[in-house]
Image (tube, rainbow, N blue to C red):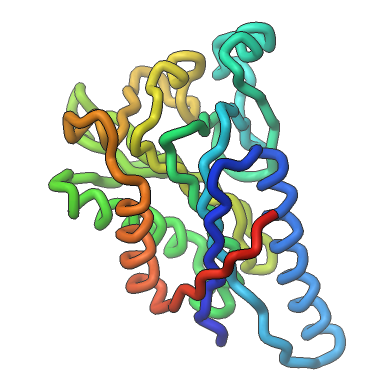
Length: 238
């Protein structure tokens, strides 16, 4: 089992370009797994983690409801935002500057074959990271992602999640609001959940900006501990 994860920080990158790159990595892992099964070989499959910040974009998952986007295409253009329907689970999500998006593209046969556990580990990675900033983040029953003040009228989401998996290979991932412009969330019903607020780490800490690189380091530390994995940074970019 290969527990090494190739790490790429793509910086600020268009959503569609990144999606296409994700798909290529995802398919390359699937191709190896199919070859292994058909030809009875034991070629090693790779694992990847992409960090990226996207320009303003709204994405709608397979089971999403288009009415959860509250504005039309013209308003999105005025706001400099794009829109895509995509092949992950979940409803509508916003990505934009000041948000750390993490895309783990893993062969879970290298770790454990349990999607429920995988999602819980993604959530735990974020929960432990936020704990280092003095925040008590939690899961909300029946709602994927990471929240603050669960079970109170002040419940608010700080990290959205949505994944796709095929033959135990994952793609898509999590979006953690660090220095996000929360005004963009007003244009949708986040994840299709009405009456719940959204927040960002800088707002919770009462500061203008939180160091993104510091947050990434903490995310990687907790991810590698939970998955018992080692990250290998690579400099290649799409």
